[in-house]
View 1 (cartoon, protein in one colour):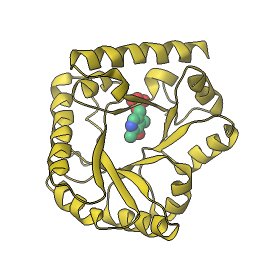
View 2 (spheres, helix red, strand yellow):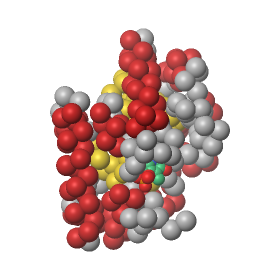
View 3 (cartoon, rainbow, N blue to C red):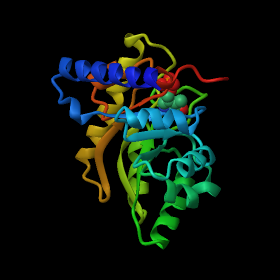
View 4 (tube, rainbow, N blue to C red):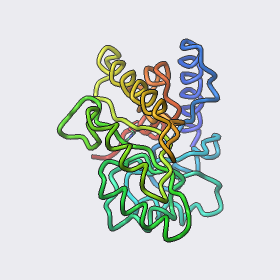
Length: 231
Ligand SMILES: *Cc1c(COP(=O)(O)O)cnc(C)c1O
């Protein structure tokens, strides 16, 4: 418990220092603690340390923790791939879906949200580095894709998300984060209905400081808070 609190405090300091280096207000960066692979007691320790935002990859795992932590006010973020048949459940369970990565998923979210008379906030996941192992819209397609999903009812597009290549080398990750920021700026210029480029979800344990320097508003940090996950 104490270890988690100390790590959260250290990460907050590093976020603040990175924001200052970039001339940004540190309060513009939200720490999303990624608790996949860890139980509700770990989430509770993070919450006690002031974490208000929690990220999960899987809907079922998130639901189990939410049930155990029903009394704790937390915002839950879905950061992993969403299967179309879990959309209905996901809409009720998450504050923000970071992983909109295909049109069929956008249509299903739209259909379900519109039926319930609500707006589902989502981020479009972009595969900036073009890695075949990663999900996401390619940079070349992101403008067309955003135009198409902007026409769907029930969806509120709130920004972009990316996962950088698995290296802490800033020379590799910095251009990836920079490109995401540039794409968001280009999309914002189009003033599409229902599209607000409010968020850049980028940066993980290895690279969140570079991401903050490049404009991240949401950093998704797991192992640096909770420790190494069991494979
Ligand atoms: C697991 C995961 C994270 C957190 O990764 P760490 O390296 O443990 O910080 C962030 N984003 C996504 C999409 C993830 O799947």
